[in-house]
Image (cartoon, rainbow, N blue to C red; front, side, top):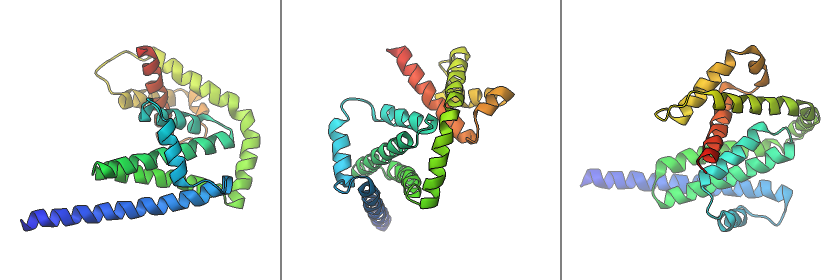
Length: 213
């Protein structure tokens, strides 16, 4: 009985910690959103997403925003996609807490914090100035990014079909193959290997969904 009581206490403490962290992140998100529209709150933005999410799978929506965030050279588009990702992950945290799925809630909370950190960084004058210069030069890199996407799609088309392989395994194999090609490796720019794997994985998932339609 003591063990059960202790487990219940630990569970309640974890739930309280997650709820407190979620509340803090929502408050910080509202502060950021107010720099764009003073009348907007996190709760209103989340409610709007819930009402307009339709029947699309949440993972499909997140993958779509992730692809845009990783591939676009347009600062506004990258910002908008990051805001949407932040709000979607806050929704996942809320739903996971209701379902008492603390692991999912914690993982999603960490991802939300990462996206919020990026957005808060945009309010730093030095970072904003650098980002503006980066966007000016980003237009010249648009073709390079397009070439990267095309190269990834070509690898996906040519990759041996194996239904027993998981998507993340295929994404890693394609990444390794592209790293071996110097011309393709240059297309990665300053992206980390993990970013490339994530990008390939998202494009692969979208590709397979289109094939299944």
